[in-house]
Length: 448
Image 1 (spheres, rainbow, N blue to C red):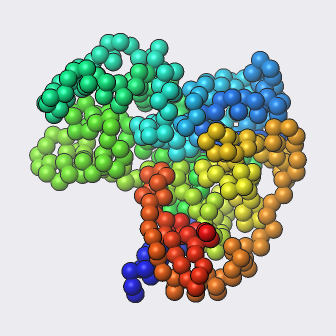
Image 2: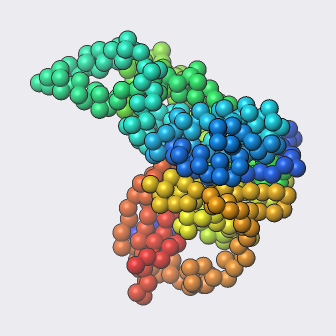
Image 3: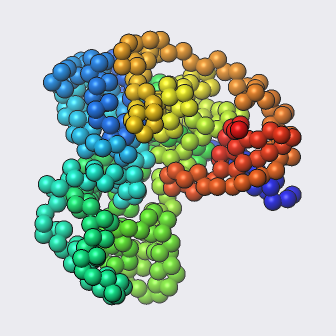
């Protein structure tokens, strides 16, 4: 097998079936039953203005931004945060509506997305600099001065020749005003950290599962309570360990997820009788947990992108385990920028690019009322029809047999990183007999 075919095989293995262990479970927590309407919103990404306008137009809130939807169940499938300018305002609105909805007999649910996860574990690449200004009042001058003095002490040893003014400018760029207020409020004891850590990563209402990314073959078939409690514990313990390692000088605020793991793994190898050895081991173990993995419910994109020939059996095993009929997700912006259905409605993707400035999308709401589905585009409610399942014969204009031949004979012309998230996946550009197509993980897309 040549290099090209080897890479193709690796790409395809990303979605090859992995047997899922069957387990018995008792369904007690994070499973709700209601006769009320369920309304779902996809990734808001800090666009408070669009979100507020959308739910006001739908009658969920009144002109004073108070809940008026009675017993309605409003579900966000995650990614309230990042990219947009007003993530904090979005969270504050959710927190207030939670209380008002409960008092009215309804509910507001947040299922954690990968951007909530990233803010908790201090992966802040997608936090706009302007967002930090919303945390200025939470950042005391003493705290900022203390971090500046630590920075200055370290920089004096490593950045000889730089003036203090230049160092201060660099410090303010790396840690914008409000950064340490944000850090405090997203800690395990902070207002937003505690709130987010209390939220599930998967929720079942009636016969529908709600989560952010998707269901991979590695998803543990345990109870919903076990999945949610274990994922919350992993995130909490990772956050605490990261803070301890920063205090020791073993890690920096600026280390990303992978460099943190590599640094501590190196320390662990040479730890000997180091008193911090157990902390190093714990941090490495937490970093390698499924719940921080690219195939976890926070990150996985196969449910939205990969061909049903790979995904349907994986999906069916999980749906059957939880006695559910449908999965509702966000995370992967739909190519059409409207709701998309897959596998005869077993999967509905609600990420329509609500944050228009970034995604050029369409703010939309999905309503689930018994077996009826509707969609709201900001002006009117219309029926939503699920797909007809024609994927079984033809995919992107070619039969399965065509794709099998293409994948065994095509030449890879270029490999490049996907550049999203922390999964380190790559895109492969392939050609065969004049046909050019892109393989992204296990998804095949023609390109020009």
